Image 1 (cartoon, rainbow, N blue to C red):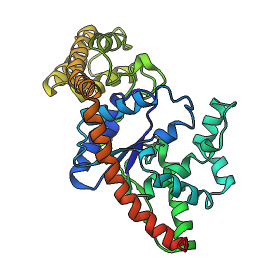
Image 2: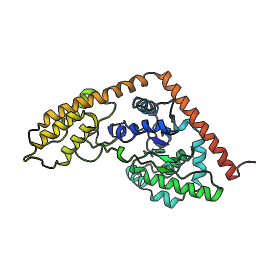
Image 3: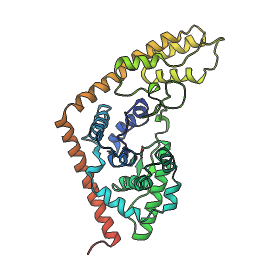
Image 4: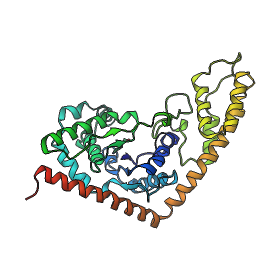
Length: 325
Ligand code: TRP
């Protein structure tokens, strides 16, 4: 089970860090992939663009290869059982631990005029998302590990008080397959909202991709054979390894090592390979987004699958809690 907030555009980091691996998982596991529209309300109370954003995230997920027939691809607010479980879990979550959460402290600092209770109980809602399907594996990045640990604590408390209903969810680690996608300016990773000029989005037009790649930081080139690469150059090679053919990469490796490399040529090649990689995803996503009947259908299908699992869990929950009169 995993979720993604419909705030900001999906980028190459999301693709290689998450979606590409989800596409493999859906072949082997029963998967629930969710668009966390309720979580978005904790930071984005204005809902004017929410529908468009939910549609875009769904379309981009499908364009990347998530198959709504195989996985349950759904929208959080379509599964009302989430809110009920969230309420019960709130009685098992302590103010102290919620206030200590890193993401809460970060967001509270970012929006001092809107430190709402939903922001505080964000990890409780996330735990509800996960255990609603009695999920065992949660493929997420490092930044979500604290939330998962909290989910395990809520599960332990629930099971201890009311009887064993939930397995403890663990972070699913992709190991070798977990690729970090560096940003184009040599500082950190690609990001959904920060650093937009150094991030390649799946919705970027061809000329935008070219412009961003050509702006990537380089220098005068290596000054002696087989020099170690500075970070920002290694980043360009890393991006190239993701989207370019192996012989193209090794030819630039060779010309780096013998000091004949021309970074302008390398970036031109990378730009074209990026365009060839991103354009088909962008175009598929666009055509899905424009097909509102198809989108409605897949949202309904996903909600049905998710609800089925949610209803079964909530029966167990109400029974365990003694909420049956
Ligand atoms: N908090 C996650 C994020 O910001 C999104 C999310 C919501 C999630 N519910 C989830 C992730 C359940 C995994 C499982 O990225």
